[in-house]
Image 1 (cartoon, rainbow, N blue to C red):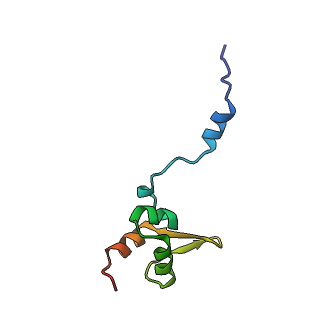
Image 2 (cartoon, helix red, strand yellow; image 1 turned 30 degrees about the vertical axis):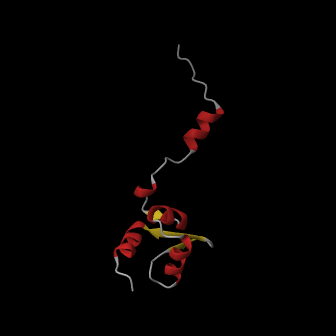
Image 3 (cartoon, rainbow, N blue to C red; image 1 turned 60 degrees about the horizontal axis):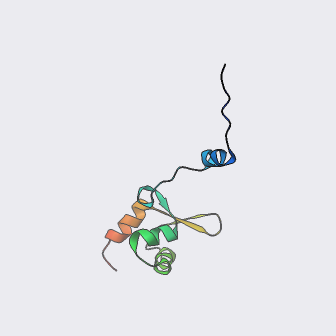
Length: 80
């Protein structure tokens, strides 16, 4: 006979969670993640996006997403 394996509520919740991806490996970053990764304050990152010096897209009405490649290019560019 086969025994049925009982699953607890915590095991079910763990299965539903998304896998953790380190910030350094994510292709899209939020402003707080970009701040943590670069050390540049969020206020400066938002100002650079607003002035079209750093590319970003809005995800919804308030969430800004920055491609990792665009962030790297912005950091590598000489200051204007």
